[in-house]
Length: 291
Image (cartoon, rainbow, N blue to C red; front, side, top):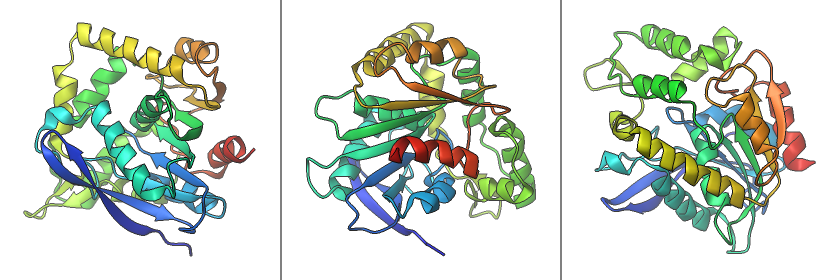
């Protein structure tokens, strides 16, 4: 079975240096690179199935964004914001792309899509094709409240099974999955701490920017995100979970009319966000990226 390499790159923030870990799949010499970037509380391991399916066509890079998974935590949690994430990705691309003119394809789920939007909006950016998985410039306030509340719960579980049940319960919007798939989705994000308790993999400081948000800052962020989206020129695929509470049908429709005028695909019986574990979902990405 194809196995990935675990690597890391050193990045810079205003608080100092930190290490970002990433999984690399496929032939290191393949000039075709696909970057897969996860949601706010998830990890690069989420893309294992998709990476295996695409590793014959791409060198697939799946980072753990700082504060999560195998990556370091930031000394200042106020820096868990999009500009820092985009900066880290630019550092990563300098490592993995063979030269400054090399292009990269991007698949971003939720937060990973926002990072992709930020990068794709910049002059001279390297993104050739962009997939936005259940994310857009308008973030429904009730969904942001739900995610913010979930992020900030500093929970400890006596057993893996208890932690896995929690992960499954809060991830029900991902749609139908087998017990084995739910087990992996939990395994990827649960860790044993020094006291033998099972905890989630990320820095609880991730919740700080959510808690610091105000109606005024949310409005400013939305204006900034629309400006970024309108600046994107590469071919863009927007995937929406038909039951999503984060990306509304109205916003999705606007995204097909503005900026890159994204191609829209809706996945039935799924909310926020499609996991792209299953073959039918992977086929949607593969058809767009390689078509």
